[in-house]
Amino acid sequence: MSRFRTLPKVELHLHAEGTLEPELAFALARRNGIELPFASEAELRAAYDFTDLQSFLDLYYATTAVLWTRRDFDDLLWAYLQRSAEQGLQHVEVFFDPQAHTVRGVAFTDIVDGLGDALTRARTELGITGGLIMCFLRDRPVTEAARTLDEAATRLDALLGVGLDSAEVGFPPGPFAEVFARAAQLGLRRVAHAGEEAPASSVLEALDTLGVERIDHGVRALDDPHLVERLVREEIPLTVCPLSNLRLRVVDDLARHPLPAMLAAGLKVSLHSDDPAYFGGYVGDTFDAVARSLGLDDETAALLSRNAVAGSFATAERKTELLTAIERWLTGPR
Ligand code: ADE
Ligand code: ZN
Image (cartoon, rainbow, N blue to C red; front, top):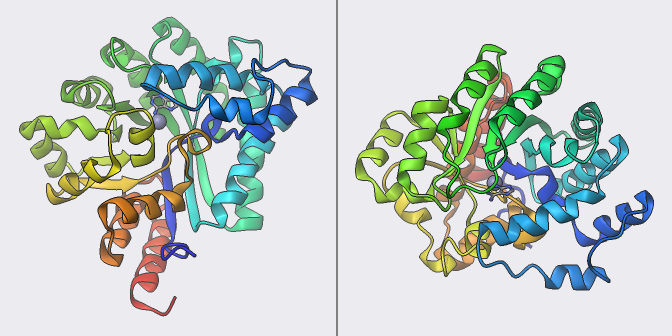
């Protein structure tokens, strides 16, 4: 059993669509009368051999086509929450990609209501808190993002914030500045993927043009010492996903992942799973994989969890509760 199983964990970088396991993908395909371009679950799983982010995104968007109804989105996230509860998950801020569904004709409200149903149940049955962060697809037109924000404006009760994801190289953050400014006016928190495949300048541009409070990935920030200094000074959280970086070949070996260098630089790094169904591990598995490849003592594991709490959008009361639980894990009997 994992040494870190009972360490309270917070997921800040988790795509709902990236939790779609092959078994559920086929079950939903049958339920909705959809043909997946794979003969079996094993054949689908065998296709998880990615060469870069785009090769993954092609498959990710193809399989999300099985998601249609409010119940589908509920079933998807509930399966993730149950599985992650067993690995010590306490709080999760869930990314989702509405445009991947609304362009196919799925109703925006069915997506947020279905995901919301699962989060409500998680709170009462599993003690897990959380919220939803709606991501704009950076490789689709800004006008489509603006229309998506219009829909979100009618459902602000259901959302914590907005993010930016999908193909990074060739799709800089700048053009989304106005959409993000309006999201801020609506009271939404702001985060963005940056410095995953694109260079450190992408992180700088996300900070300066979108006003983001967290950077998702940010591993390439290390290439720019001035940027690192700023991220440290401004205590910008970086949500790092080592298993994702390995499977998308951002790094060629987990043992050479920049996580130790990021911690040594004083960056506010935390550990997450990104798209766990595709990358070989949920949040607890991620702690275990880091421990195996890079070494992870209890103090550092607790620091990574503490950083996630501090960088989260949880209430002050919930943050105190989580920080207390982490200290109890570190100092008490397990
Ligand atoms: N969408 C889902 N996972 C992603 C990732 N790792 N990077 C960018 N967009 C994504
Ligand atoms: Zn991501």
